[in-house]
Image (cartoon, rainbow, N blue to C red; front, side):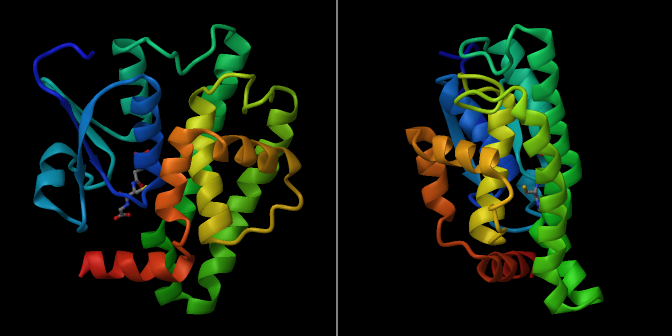
Length: 224
Ligand SMILES: N[C@@H](CCC(=O)N[C@@H](CS)C(=O)NCC(=O)O)C(=O)O
């Protein structure tokens, strides 16, 4: 049970891969939280806790922290049960690397808001190819990188930080952007392993019918 008297609050959006990283970590660590579902861009309540106006943001007693990476490292230090990082330094560093590749070189470039913008300034026909191009580039690197480290999961036989980044990103790639996964046997194997875990299944069920057009329209409505 968490310290402090108040249940943690997570500002989240159901289709956000960044929020899902944190929801998975909270679940693995067995931490209770109230989920505040954000439904509009620029929500004043969200802006109070994250001036960037992005999800996720976490409020834990007097600590207010946003950005999934910062939140996950905070949770890891404060609630060490079910560690998100392996002891072995080299495997630990690969977890950091995977998190960074997904959060810096893939997710922001296929973010629905950005892809809608590309559709407006370039052409609607470029939206999906743009997203697929950037996801594929990152996946090529991840597929090579993880060959040396993967077990049942990305960096061994336990779920770690890298998996929390990979699972929602794979979901976006496969279900939303219909990326051809033929050249990624290892990532496909990991995706299958995640789909067999109940906590991941629940998350995947939420977005299984969310194709790119539905996601683009939802984001446009929520920005209106
Ligand atoms: N680096 C941040 C990125 C946060 C982010 O991009 N969140 C997305 C959802 S995954 C968002 O709030 N998008 C709303 C928008 O683009 O306006 C993190 O890891 O939390």
